[in-house]
Amino acid sequence: TVLSFIAYKNLLFSFHDEGTTAWISNRCVMAFLYGFKNSLNQLQVKFYTSFYIYLNKMLLGQYNSTLGKYVGYTEKTKEIADNLNKNKGFLEHEKKNKEKCRTNIPLVLDILSRPGNDCRNLFIKWAERSVQIISLVKNSKHPGLFMCSAYNFYPKQIKLTWLRDGKEATSNVTSTDELPNGNWLYQIHSYIEISSKPGEKISCVVEHASLTEPKVYDWVPITEAGRNKIAVGAAGLLLALVFPIIGVIFYKRKATGETHKQKKKLERQNLKL
Image 1: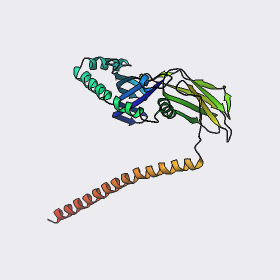
Image 2: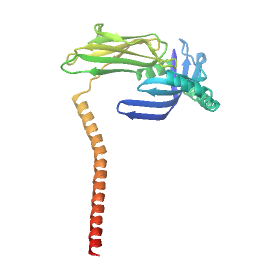
Image 3: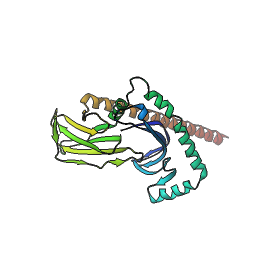
Image 4: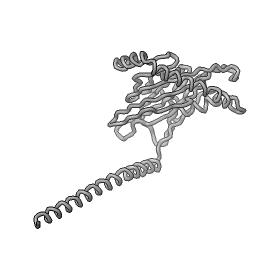
């Protein structure tokens, strides 16, 4: 089993505009491979640094210290990666990032070796934060479309099962393959299209080598109070954005009006002269 930590993550650039999202980041990731006895003496430590470039959730290119070079995944980024690999300055910078990542290993091992920090328990707690169920479509004209997603798991083999009120549901279920993240870890997404009844319990069951038993995740619908809180929060945010803009417009108009009055006054004075 693998226990993976992101020791640090630096967001170097982020851009959002009319549905377009781009971001560039640096990561230091450590993977601790251990056997069934979960002994720290059995730990094999692997680590790497990565420099990622994403556009609309698509990985366009990266530097991976395991490969020791930049890699592009489109024609344009392949060309950019080739140029970067010829630049000793960029490669030296990435080597320094790798060394910085290495220096964090003793700190993480110290945390793992403390009493009560069982490796498997730590992994389960970490893995639980990497599974979520969301409702994608829900209205009177269409059935509900639910998605269960599992992120950052290893090994690759995993099974996602849908339950309706505790009974397995197999109709109208589709799933992606296990999708590689490019860092030994994987993600998978499973979808179910159903016309759920009020009060019906929708669950996703995850079976994986990192878990001692299948883990059930229940879908928690947003209540009316929750929707109201979201609406109030959104309205508050909108007002917080609108009022300063109105203030700026009012100030500019007032300043323009004052300037216009002063100009007219000077014109009248010049006519008298």
